[in-house]
Amino acid sequence: MNTISIALFIIGAAFDLFGCIGLLRLPDVYNKLQSATKSVTLGTCSILLGLFIHYGFTAVGLKSLIAIPILFFTSTVAAHALVRGSYIFGIKLWEKSVVDDYKDVANIPDEIKEEK
Image (cartoon, rainbow, N blue to C red):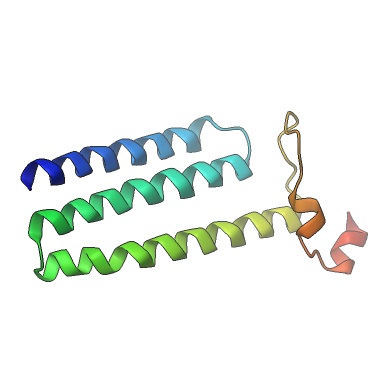
């Protein structure tokens, strides 16, 4: 069990590192948010799962097991809110972006559409 938890710690740390590198390297806020939410959520959930495997059904293990779905749902909802707010605020996509799928479903209020 110790080997499995160490492997999950290393995998989680690697995904967290890749998410942080994505925050530094990717060109616009939309790509950066995708990197942050996908990589860092998977990495942190792996670390929490490793904690559960290492400690078992103790207070630490149960808290880490409870934190996994909380982290998963709150980070995705927060990322969606940040992307929608950024889009409504008028932050442009990267100039080499090919598709703007959010344009048709953003439900931007009419008074903001008129300002753009």
